[in-house]
Image (cartoon, rainbow, N blue to C red; front, side):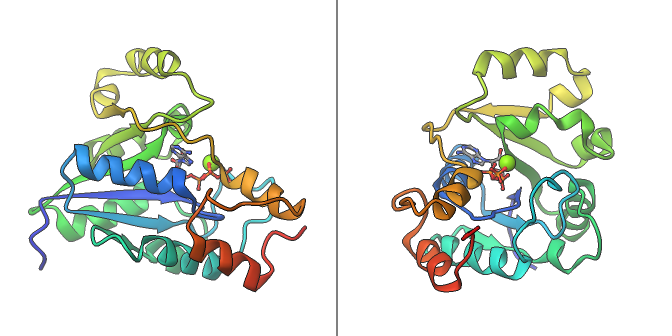
Length: 205
Ligand code: ATP
Ligand code: MG
């Protein structure tokens, strides 16, 4: 067994992973003194059926390329290996069972994701198992986020910590569109991920 005291899960589609994800995870690691951040690429996300999500194998490999240089970062294939839809509660429960007596659990999200927390499966149970770290993100105002959290039942609201990070107006959607439109994606994501996208012809359409 490891002797991690504080570990975090950074969930996402990572289609593709970019510097917005990495900055949020690293800021959380620093501020919350995390021993490890596990990036967990989703298998088949229930909330993203409006576009065909790239094969999990590609998203998993890109995530590995992106985190390779950070000794605190790891990639977990837990959601990819699970059949059907992935819910945060399933993943958090699995991490909880693995580390419970030993480590405190955090879940890192962007501000936009937190605004949807009430739609998440078993949200009350979720906030019993872990604390949330909500990274600010261009497009969601800090005021709006604060107001939203204040209105949540205490049980849930008290488990959400807002974390201000250097604002990066980067999204996977924008990166996919740029590739499709033959525009540059340089300096929006790690170079190794950019090369992987080119080499495998991802996001061409
Ligand atoms: P898409 O455009 O496909 O939704 P995305 O850029 O939002 O992609 P996701 O994989 O959906 O990336 O995000 C995973 C997590 O990372 C979410 O909690 C999201 O809010 C957060 N996140 C993504 N981009 C940023 C960013 N630029 N700054 C802060 N948090 C971010
Ligand atoms: Mg998103």
